[in-house]
Image (cartoon, rainbow, N blue to C red):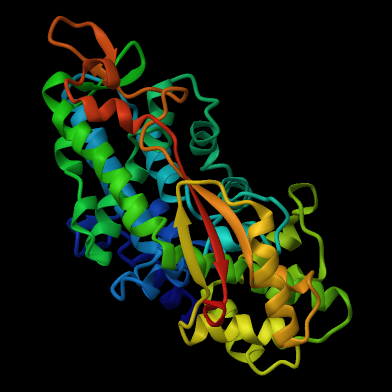
Length: 418
């Protein structure tokens, strides 16, 4: 009797849930499969991965997560499917579900503080590749119900516009993160009219197009993207914090491989002890990666402040206490020779080698390109039914300048060397 009662309770769980989102209002879960994916530990982990990394050190409100973002993307995809169907584009229930699953899981492979980990303790394995590994594993667990979504995600499905909805220069991902990051950071310049953009969408010859009357919304979208990169994603304080975090993880891995025992969680220790590439990323590695989130890193930083190693403890204190390196941006390339006097002085003052000063004094560059002419274009459907690249259709001269790659150079060094 007890078993029967338990089964009855489980079968009556309502899986058609709604989320109250500060951006869009209510977001609905369209079916039981999507609900089960959202409930999966792989996806729940995204609640513990910040959407904007260390940007909260600049914008205190930017504490939203990738969980927020993924649900927002799915909501926009629901709107896009409704609009395209209304305009006569045939999308089967299976294709619709594949679009929802693909966009929901597009960021599931992000590690703690995203890009910092990709460039330090996981050897050049990009989050898109890990997302695909997660999707394949979930497909096994869900008896092949994600197969079509994976095909779409990989660009192997025969309907091109579906991939464009997920990954292009005007996709649901960008529409949500610009609007969401603008809202939480308070950078108003990043706010885009995603509702208007979606209403203007159509499909011609299997390509996603924007109707001509929506061109001003596209122009605003591209300008917002450029401004968000300079003001938020590439803000010099966010940038230097992420660079310091990369140096910390690199140093921690270096010490661990030399036999130094550092306090940290087991999953983080695994990635510091082993060289992990896409070829060695097996099911066991994926399971350990799935246990990693921002809390592992923050917990480690707090503990590493007290380590004997001058480099690791000093850098960890910088993040925890927000007392960061000085960063200077310039439009001119910085010669390596310019750093030598700073390095020599810092090495002498802190009794470290010149090689070790590379953790504190370094240079690099950042790039910003709001629109790429080499990538899949944003197509504008003209009133005479011809199709043009948005760059050709726009009467805004500044739109052409948005397609130019802007490079800025930086140097970082401790403030006491000023």
